[in-house]
Image 1 (tube, rainbow, N blue to C red):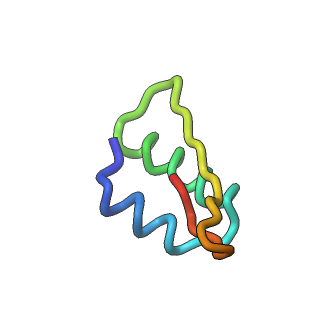
Image 2 (tube, one colour):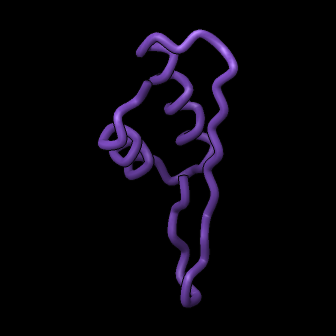
Length: 54
């Protein structure tokens, strides 16, 4: 319901994981989502550096 490029743009626009999740759910609703949406946002550490994981 939300194109990958929009997901990446939203994930890059927020620093807080909860804000990213909320923005993704809102975008899915705007794009016709009706119910049962799940968003998982996590931080994956590689080589001691944080990397966002969607």
